[in-house]
Image (cartoon, rainbow, N blue to C red):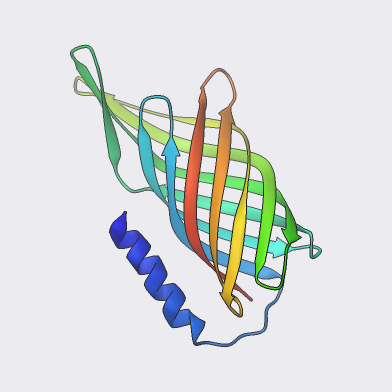
Length: 172
């Protein structure tokens, strides 16, 4: 996790020297920790969005798992991981000044997951509603840092999860 945060910070510092006109497109990359009842998964998050108005935008996420998580139940150890996830959101943004804004978002997500226990491998998927919010700070023109929280409520009794993320964002 430290390596990823250092890499994102380095990219942000280097990109701060570049100048570009701020436009309606945002591209970002960062780290997100997804906490379920029994495990916490590390993911690389890629995100793109388009501002329909200064207040409303649409956003898409693509997540890749960065490793697996082991959980022990009695004498059985289950190893599980997030292979990938995708999501689409509507975002309402409130600019507080030229550099800082807060936002709320809601949408739908899909995750492909896999697990193994006692030499038997399983794979499957979960999907459901997602909502959350966060803040974005534009520290140098079109370059920003974003922190966010997302609550995943999976359908068909598949539980829920809480995710906390930090990412670098570039506006075009």
